[in-house]
Length: 463
Ligand SMILES: [Zn+2]
Image 1 (cartoon, rainbow, N blue to C red):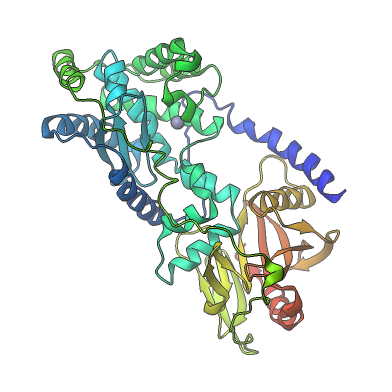
Image 2 (image 1 turned 120 degrees about the vertical axis):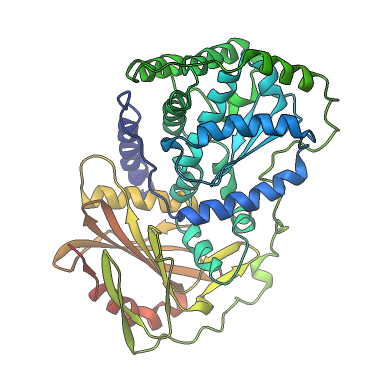
């Protein structure tokens, strides 16, 4: 019952989100909410790029690689591209596609160039890809979908783990390749602006999309399945162009482009290989865990929380926490983990917080209402944690003289064979809902109550 009501409520919230999609041409486009720092985007992209380079056939031709790099750098040098360490790699693959990883590594299929009529059309697709990087769409979507697992992973980083492998384990990597319609619309618009700033005629982006869409049917280019049409794609790009300053544009050096195409056309077909569904092949995948009933419940050697507290003072929030715990992820990140180091574990299911708390801001669209925003947040939690369910109605509370809600949830503990008790605290803030999820195995929750109460009681906001 509770779940049904949650679904209906969250549907209403989701339906209001595309308000952001009905963006006006020329309006500034900014990256959305993100649990990762910029540096973590870069780290993640490097790790994935290393995996991908082993799975695709990078074209071994200096002249061709220099060509694509020169073109890509013109786009990467524009203000809208942000200051990421972009790289451009041409791979031997006849399908019409290109993709970019968080932080900048960009891969362009030979088939994309062969399908294009001029350099500006290729620049249109590459600009679109770079826009996904600059707008941090990959980590934004992973953050939204799995925002309880990701703080655990980011906290796990402190213990020196591989970010890409950890995301692969929780299945979050899929979000890095397929984006929402809003993200696609934004990437089209920002990509078109980059083209114009780099001197390429942005109309060629719209023309190329038109051409790809015309192919349609079962032979639809791969680019369109990984970057679906957000609706009226060509018209939206044209509307964007209409508000741009009139500059002099080029389609690129046509003679040079034809020479590049001729060279690519002569490449031997790629060796038969597993399809570079690059992001799924990488990390070690656990091959099923034995039935829990066969095993004793797992436990961790976590020292009990100290009764002595120390103060955390951040730019936006401060609170007390036990002096044998740590606060992770406070630098440039939208969330933090407050936990004993031994309570952040890595097991067959990936990283997870078994004891401690995760806090952050959950951005809420449209009109603010604590009860509705809390329901939307719980729906996101359940999306990323299918075993999770709500076990109480929200209770009213006060935090730093503001109204707050407390909601009980239960789910599977990352400790094998154990249930987990969670208490979600939500407080309305100017930029969204401030939340803290308190986490402990169900049968030990009582031992942590006093600690959690003190963290909640001591919370103070900067404004
Ligand atoms: Zn896209």
